[in-house]
Image (cartoon, rainbow, N blue to C red; front, side):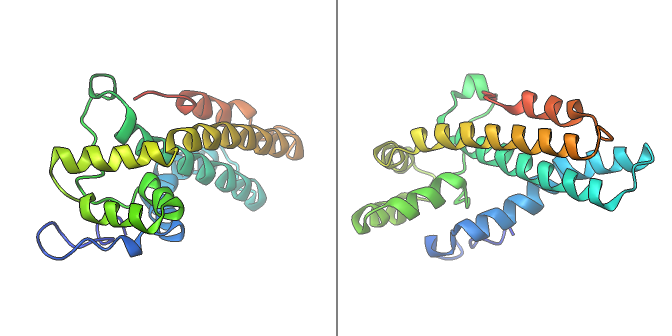
Length: 188
């Protein structure tokens, strides 16, 4: 889904109309959330003898949400983190990726701002990338992300506490919290 969101560079025009929140969530769910968060924990639970479908469903609910948070965070860091800290130069804008930032920008932008995005997104040109990042700043996407991160962290903590209370600790809270604390407010 990620690779087929847009034509390959030079093959066809950029089509930002395909970048919707539903499409983004589908990409994230299957690109990151299941294989990086849910499946490793589900496999460990199964290997530990936890086979209760309700417990596995609770784990899926928590871990898929955590995987979505991780990918949104990754998209944010791609645009805003210093390459020296991140360990790489972010290229989502140049690579025409359906990222959380562009989806949020499209949802908030005026027609003129959308025209600016369409003229600059998906181009391997430093000036075009700078224009897109300036538009992100103009739209307040840094503040939007910070609010999203805090709300998501709170929501995940509540889901984890409720799940562990409902199951009598059959899945220790630390299983989830150790993952959450590794990614919360990460910089790389």
